[in-house]
Image (cartoon, rainbow, N blue to C red; front, side):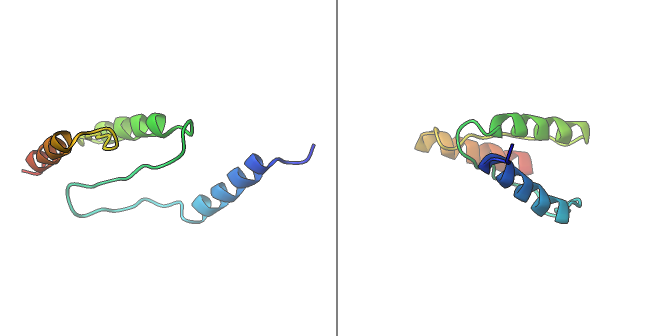
Length: 86
C-alpha cells in the first residue's frame, strides 16, 4: 500500500526535527512557548507532557489559554506572569 499524504507529512516533519534535535538553552525568564495547531492534533497533550517535564526539572510551568480569555482575563493572566517573574 502506498503511503498516504498524512504519512508523507509526518515523515517530512520528523526529518526536519531530527536535523535539529538538540536542547534549546533559554537564558531569560520567563520562558514563553507558543503552541499552535489545528483541532485534534495533540496540543493539550503536548502541553501537559511539557509541563510535567518542566516540573520534574524543578521549574514552575504556567499554562494560559489565551483564545478564550476576556480582556480582563488576559490582563489577569499577564499580572500572574509578572508576579511569577518576581
